[in-house]
Amino acid sequence: MAAPMRICYNNVVFFVKNALKQDFGKFTPSFIIYPSITSYNKRRISTKNYDSHRYCLEAVRKYDYENYLCTLLLSEPVKSAAIAIRAFNVEIAQVRDSVSTSSIGQMRMIFWKEALDKTFAGNPPEHPITQELAKHINRVKLSKSWFQRLINSREIILNDKPFVSVKDLENYCDQAVASVFYLILQASGISDMNCDHAANHIGKSQGICNFLRGIPFNASKGRLFLPLEIMSKYKISQEQLFRPEQKKNLQDGIFELSTLAHQHLQLGRKLSSDLPKQAKHVFLPAVAAEVYLNSLQQTDFDVFHPKNQRRNNLLPVQLWIHKIRNKY
Image (cartoon, rainbow, N blue to C red; front, side, top):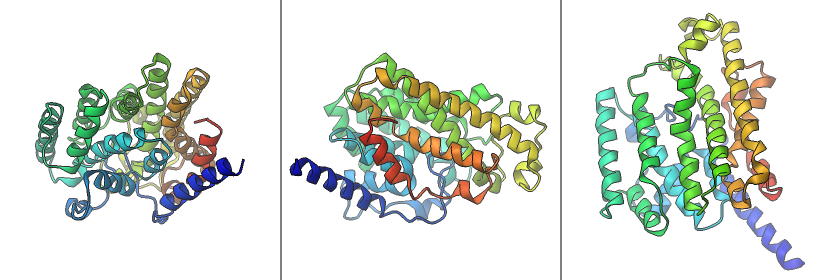
């Protein structure tokens, strides 16, 4: 009895120590449309003294904090593959924010498309992310199409145009977020229709949450991404985004999108009883999505409220409890 207790204790200590390496200051939105608020030159992680896995781990830890915590709770070798997949997504997600024009961003996307082709052809470029991906592509069958969907999703928003409808936003979230879940499920050796359905719903829920979380950041850059359908329905003007003191109509629109995210979360969780245990661990990001939706509700759906822009210091504990209970 003592040995299992000691193993469990050591696992908790390892997880918490890794989590507490973070800077728990103001939350920097991660994995949203434009997740980084630092310049391209400043955000680059030095490759000095880093192997490819360490580079990927550091990229996810620094720019995709919540998903980093969730990935730490996966078992090896799935955890290493998930880190590589999420590092690739982090790199793609930050392209638009790291360039001055959409044309330069398009050139970056072309580079990553070619890098992806070479990686799957067995000749990965000398980049830590592609080098790390190559290791796992050789070990498990990861679909190139899911990586291509990640790139295509980020190309859609290079021109800074808002989504036309809520459906367009959902489709974006399916490509940009659910595709990551599909890849991690493949890395886990899981091929199951119920898992795919859960990935679709959880991905859309997390994607919408990240989109809502990114509204203040995008507004500060003069970017408008709220679906035109929502803006027309609730008579939301651009001033209400760029001048948040005039925000009553905006909160009504945020309420509708939050409700949609919650519906997808519930649909994803309804499938829980039909999923294998390992798949439930893949969907732990649902916990962070629920925490954010609850925070929005407590602040009357005010995305500009400081509470909704800070990291949740209790998230490591909440994730660990959900893993122990085999829930997401």
